[in-house]
Image (cartoon, rainbow, N blue to C red; front, side, top):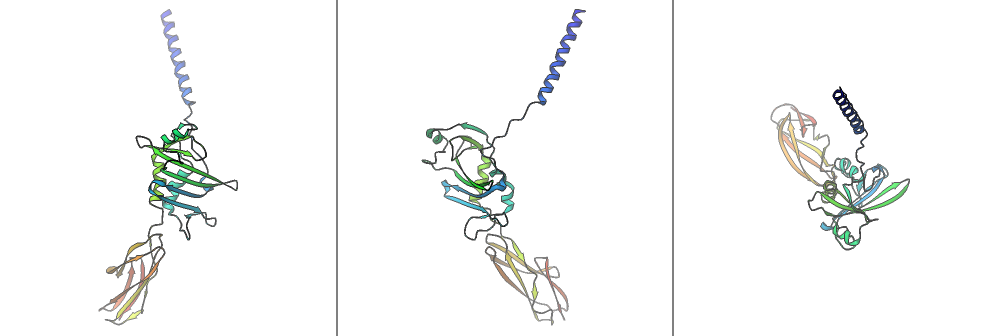
Length: 275
């Protein structure tokens, strides 16, 4: 009988420990996420990223009228939001800290991480201005060396000597907007074509005009295709600088009477009659 009581007691203890363990697991909180800084991206007003080792730099500023970011130069163009809008705001909102590796580092310690801006060439120097409660607040971030494995970079705020690590991907994305600036890519816009005459005689020359514009921020080369009744009859290659336009002219001669639909790049049409 004592043996039975002992077994029951052991089982009760085991059940109690199991229940307690389950309840305890519910109370375990995930580790807190720490950031070097953390602001609402909407408050960012301007940004300058410099890569001293490659002598590269780009600056961007938010225009108050449309709240879009533009290249901060004379007559600067708007950035490509397909590149800017996805990754850049999330990264600039505040890089997630891998860990703090040194609090209030000395000059010698900063040099070990490539973060002594007075004596060393940094990998990156990022300056940004946030508008906080109507007051501009400036921040400057130094990026030094990578760790031996190349998976993280050492960074610190210029205003203090606390050294952190951030993931290499954070550095790569920001460096890319300097080495590969987020210009809107060359994009062809075709206006509705026109003809020299709505009706022409058999064997006469019909002239087709169309205005083509590069809506991108970089120079691009484009094919302008002429189709008649769905059949490709001519192609002209044009090169346009940013926001430039050009009138492209085609001439056709038809030997059969009928109605012809002239199409530019398949979706811009004009009709003429040969009789």
